[in-house]
Length: 232
Image (cartoon, rainbow, N blue to C red):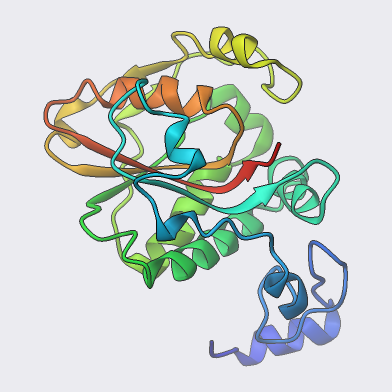
């Protein structure tokens, strides 16, 4: 990746640091240093996207073509600090950079073959106002920059947010997202193969609730991509 003069100058004035280990990044590194990038706990689900532990979460819930996450997520791990900074510390650049990383990782496997549009997981207007951005949209922008696929952001909306899913059990997560999404523009996605993008998958309840709304559009096909999946 070519590095501009201004990037090099900014690295001298205000050095960028790896979001996992805190070491200084070189001019050619983004978000993660080479060592932390190398040691990401990769799932390799993109190699078997039709049948893997993530894809199985959605079997019988709504039709899913393929599903994969980049890494395994564990609380208090290095990648958990990355996700926390991305979602709660205003570091939207992490999301876009990680979108680029996952896209490059998945390209060689043919994961994006046949995908026609990217659909970032929507959040409520109030939550986006508080955070300043939607991290799933930023991830999608990173994926778009690598794949060239268009983003469809207004086909489905999130109607409410009751509370965080983080500390809830599986049945509580399902109840928490009941009727949380609404299909608003079926025509924009009808007949297309969509890639629904989220940051972390735990039980799959949120993606299921959103995917069920998307599946109401005629002849739509849905695949799923996330940065992480919780490792039990």
